[in-house]
Image (cartoon, rainbow, N blue to C red; front, top):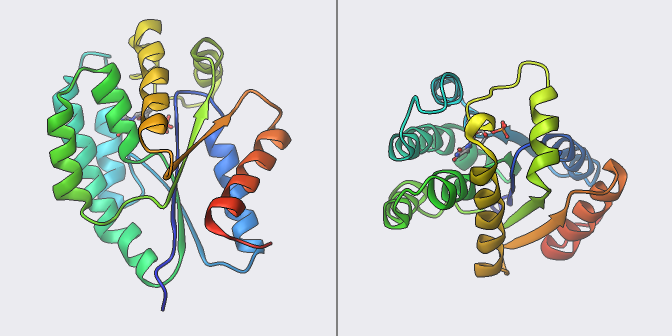
Amino acid sequence: MARGRFITFEGGEGAGKSTQLKRLAARLDGAGLQVVATREPGGSPGAESIRELVLNGAADRWSPVTETLLMYAARRDHIERVIRPALERGAWVVCDRFADSTRAYQGAAGGTDPALIAALEAHILEDTRPDLTLIFDFPPETGLARAAARPGAEMRFESKGMAFHEKLREGFLAIARAEPERCAVIDAQGSIEAVDAAVWTTVQARLAVHG
Ligand code: TMP
């Protein structure tokens, strides 16, 4: 059985990633592929418990380094129990956020040493790396307003202030510039249909899906 493909969705708050992820999962399913749609932090029972800890409470509840470690504890469980087994049985895994969120939130915006993050990537991800990463680019002012209006929104990261969110946006764009073969930037300001079309065109072109 050929290994499946691993696609990650990344970007700041309120850029419409989750809606687009559902649409892409449906399109891949329609193309006859086995699809696993998941998210981080979370995606496995243990990682969802860590999500509760890390996303709720006061903005300064955890330092950026502690957050990095919590994100990586959750990520390892998710990889071991969900992502790697799915890829091995040939499924396509579409994941709402992954390692680039740690680089951008805890690294670029939070100030965690990039060397720590790189070491965790090497030891914890091993060869479980995305084949394609879509970076949803969206102005943080609008994104934060949208995210705050969501029912049941977890507000810890939303409440970190505009300077944090500007650094975050730049952090994601810097990742895309550094790794253009893996990453594609999606302008998330269009209509849901326009963004959906851009996502599908990109996935078809980069990963040779027909459907
Ligand atoms: P969500 O709002 O897209 O569900 O993401 C949850 C929050 O967790 C979001 O504010 C970004 C944050 N996050 C990090 O700070 N680092 C990470 O590694 C991940 C996966 C998410």
